Length: 405
Picture 1: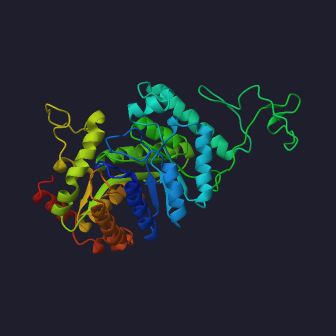
Picture 2 (picture 1 turned 90 degrees about the vertical axis):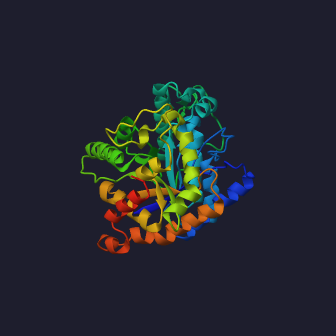
Picture 3 (picture 1 turned 180 degrees about the vertical axis):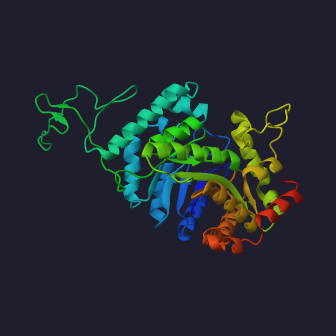
């Protein structure tokens, strides 16, 4: 299994921003020095509250490229509907060159209305159909920019090159590759540099609903999923597998092309994990679920009891048994083995720097995960049972004793 760190930089306590960056750099260098496979930076805007405080994952990636040697550098994600597609393609290609070909490109459509309408009015989330068309066209242009020496594009939102522009320069010999040699009108343009990885770096789309999952598979994209329970994830994994198998005319194994994000906090005891990080993950989920409600946390066919407010059921016990990797190393090992067993999970991203969490506590959790979880997960399958000090049956009994089921 490949392990990545989902570096969703948060600043709920409003510490000086340079301190926040230094803490992020510490996480980055630690993961690189300890052979994690990847680190992923996020993109959010206008978040004066401090829930999500990183505006530019590519600039974070440039810093990471300069201070790391081997870890892959991803974005989870670039909200591509907010950006000029050519400039974004150039920036990603330049980062790929700077990092020596270590970039994974994460893409998404955006989830927060105040970001979308102010970053690009065409990306307004109130018009989901238009937002998707913009997303599709932006990605099409980015791929052209990376893979074609000279390219052109005429679409709903963008036309490249701009019609009617003539180009004459003694040091730029006319060529029908990009020019109408009779009129000197530019007909195609070329983006420099191209990515080091050819034809382009791996692309990962953040997905949730069935249509997005199918579309990603049909268009050759990997996927990043986050919140759902194991049972709900299995349906999503199967949708992706089936669509990818049909598109590529082969039997795609379950789990191929999928990366899962899980909230993680490892401590010496179950009680300590809840005490140190429980309140912080609940606060973050209150932020996320304000719009979504609790639907993404439910098993297929599950019906929650009616409450006065839609988030009345959102507490630690509710979250923990559904999707949190919170607890002792043994507990977390067993939960990840469940993901491997049920989903054939191949790529896992975890994070511990929740809004309000103490940085030292965050680092302690990451180090415990590194030292006491990853080595057990990456043993040969024949040795996994020996490596886990508690069985899955014991795990469920332990959850019951803590009133978690």
